[in-house]
Image (cartoon, rainbow, N blue to C red):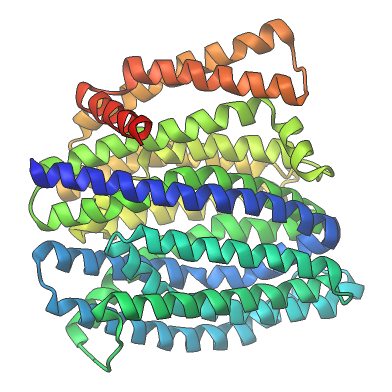
Length: 510
């Protein structure tokens, strides 16, 4: 009981650090996006997103190997095998170096050919776009070499380090925006160069801090075939989901460019910025929770693991839902307040993206059960099929002349079906308690969804769409109030209510 209490306190403390980080980054991200859009213009902003997106399609290497590294580090920590930690870190770092070389070769051959021959780029901006592409490739390599250190910090649950370095990163990005406005050169070219320099400084900071804080971060030459096989076997199946995810994200972005042009890429970029900002509330909470899920599995404490999975599933949905409701009902005003000049379709794109995000929030935490067990093949195959269907059906829809927003409808339907498919796979592979999941998670989430949406519509029914800062602020307070009440009544069990009250009491004492 003492260990569980200490784990819960650690999760709460780390979540606090991550939210501090997230709030600052969200504020800076929203502010910088507005300034960048203004300085670059809609066309150059769209060019940067679609050209940089080609390089981002290689980022599957980052996320997949990061997950594998963190999983193996946490598993060895759960087993108490400290000697194996340095082997895991060193082997993963060597693999990152090898993959970065492969990535550069692919990017500067196949990727460069694609940018030059397939993307729709105005002739007068072509040279700047090519420079952006090369800068993006180098930025990707630097970020790839950073991931080992990042994964180690998360595995050790030292979120304070993660938060402080991110704050430094945010400050550098503010300086970047200042320089972008005062230096009189091609703004698109300068933006790509400055983003590369910021990534280099952040990578250097992570390396210095990790080498001083964690013994295993002193890289030594090692070539353990069994460990390498395990890392690549795990990350290989993660890659299948991550690569196909690129089809449904950057692939769809390229399809929009090819069928509708860069202006609508800018609209989609705005929607994805909002998506990233809102989703960061859930992502930060899950970043703090994931190490405990994997460690508890390694220790054989599945009772605590499933309780943690169920609680985090509800919490991720509730956090996202509270944020999403005011935005869904006031999207046009909020985007106008943020950007001043809102690209066409950005409002509708944003609303559809948020609806899809709410569906994803209900099943994101259960993926960590699959990762903790190491039995990820079938789970990743289900994910991969869903992503491929989104990209393929989008291409078919655009070929048949359907409007640009059709892809978002497709994603919502596929992700809804994907929830049930994921549960079926987990039930077969790790005997996941599906009935308990529906009783503890899906039932209360459904109740709160229905009643909160109904209650949130009442002010709109009586007062209409009055769009000013005061009315939107009061409406947001109403939505948070009624949703919070329903969550307290139907969303939390006695234990969760007790933990929440303890947290509130500590805040007021401080």
